[in-house]
Image (tube, rainbow, N blue to C red; front, side, top):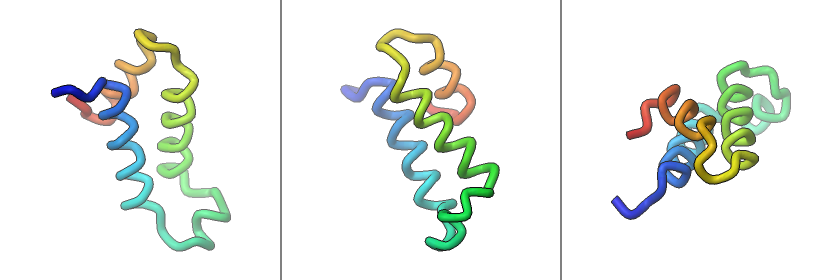
Length: 65
């Protein structure tokens, strides 16, 4: 695979957000704990430097090989 772990994790998180996103009104309310957790993980992934163990932690939590 040529994609980095970060790229694979990002793709999975974005797919899960899209699949679980609900309606625009539900997204605007921002009170869905699953969506909030996915967004928090995506934010942490974006903030992590290359090689940071948080990338591995998020990958393990979301079953990304």
